Each structure stands twice: as structure tokens, then as C-alpha cells.
Length: 352
Image (cartoon, rainbow, N blue to C red; front, side, top):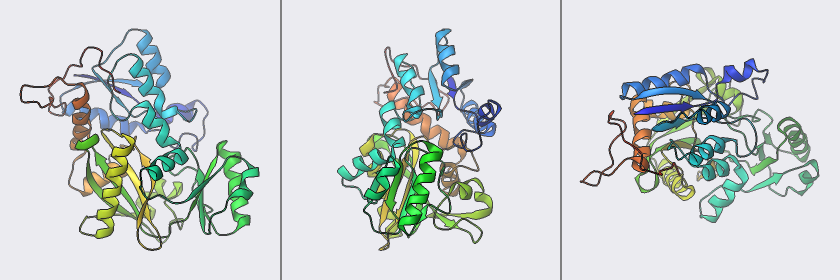
């Protein structure tokens, strides 16, 4: 099968003059090479497309693919992660990972928490600060935690993110508003264990592939899994695979799977949780477009610790996508993309 790859390459944007912080969520060339290598070892032909503007040009030129493996983050707007999926939907080209609705919803952390709360799932109390005038209306017990409303990879999270006084709240919110030009999400700070749960699959077929605990080292920025701690994780962080034999982990995995299904996430991703003062896990964020660097990204790290190879992870993602686009065999099972057997999309099929 011919599989296109859509992505935002950090080096491309740095060459355009964007800063390290602005490009923090974008991928290294080693990630693209790893995904492409896995797809080729699984028996597929690959075609590097690139970012949404490159995709637009290729589509206008008449190029088409059996499937697009999409990890493009986008640069502008609250719906930036939805841009490639929406464009592919418009051309009836199937793709991996979630649809435009899910991508837009989960990037907006406040809206995500409202849906989780409405679904009866635990998430910290929060307040959105859209302007300096909103800071005085925050009415939550200290300590608090503040971060940009619609960023990933720990952007905007540092040693000042844990807030203990109104003065710290004002200073942090003013800085984040000025730097990221978007609202600030202020939450009740959770002082307990930090967990991240990896999931593969879609809907009833979704399953937990593993959970790891994030343990900050002595030299790490304290209090949170910050941008610096993530970027220098090999030096500052210890990752420990934990199992459902621990009742806290069992609860975290049940909550994560319920949230994944509630929001309609697809194929593979990651959920971040933290425990409150009583040891109860609460959902912090959902990441339906998780990083896929083999050694540096959390989801592949979880898989490696759980005995799942990188090629197997990519295969699980493809198999989940196959359930949406592959013809049904007489025995009722969709053909596997991971086994190198091409699956042709149905006429008019889309990734939605």
C-alpha cells in the first residue's frame, strides 16, 4: 500500500526563522525516518509529504495515497492539529489518528476538561484566564498550577508553574498571556504521582498498552513534568513501568480508557494523569497525536518498557486504521495493514 507521511519538521521551521520554543512540538528528522522505516519493514511504499501547505500543493497537483500517516501538529490557531485531517477528509483520503473534531477539542484543554467532567471522569478544578482582568476572578484553593490553554510538549510549564500566592498567580498569568497570546488554564495543583498511560486502538477495540510513572530526578525542575524536564529527560527524569496490580494504576488505566472512548480518540495516543493529595488519579490532558520518536517520546518509551517493539506499535496503529478503510473478509475481519497486505479504501471512504 502507498502511504503518505504528513508532519511538521522542526528544522524546516527553524530555517524559516521560528524560535526553539515556537517549534518545540515539531518533529526531528530522526522521527520521520523511524516511522518511514517501520512502515517499509511492514511492507508498504512510503511518500514523504510534509506540512499542511505541502499537502495542499500535492493534492492540487492530483497526488493521492491509499492512506496518510499523519503526525502534523500545525502552526497557527486552536484547530491547527485538525488542519491536515480536515483537508484529507475533504478529499476522501483515509489517515491515521483522530478526526478534526477530536484534534480541535483536545488541544483546547479547558473544553476537554468540560467534556471529561460532563462524562463523570475526574479532572482538577480549573479556571480559564483569558486576559489580565480575569486573574482576580480565580477562586480556587492554593496551591495552583498554570499553563497555556492550547500548547503541548510542556510548553510554558516551568519552575514557576506551581503557584502558592496571589502575587505568583498574577506574575505567571501575565507572563504566559504575553508570551503565548492565548488564555491560561489555572488548575488545582495535584501533589501526587505523575502517570502517563499509552493506548492503542479505537472505540471498543481500544486497549491500554502500558502505564509509566514519571519520577523527577534531583536536578530536575521540581513540581511538574516541565518543558525542560521533557527535553532533557535522559538526564533529569526516570521512567518506571507500573502495572495494574497497583490499585492506583488500575484506576488510572480504567479512567484513561474511559476518556479515550468518551472523546472518540483513534488508533493510538497517550493520557497524562496526576494523583491528588489522597492518591486518587485525575486526568490532566489527552494527547491523540502523541510523539513517536523511538527513544525520546513517551508512547514509544512505554511500549519499549512493556516489551512492544517500535514496529509493533506502528503496526497496531495501522491495524486500527485498517478497521475504518479495509474491505471486510468473509470471516468478518478487516485485513491487516501491519502484515504488509494492501487494503484498498472503499469508494467514498474518509478518515472520519
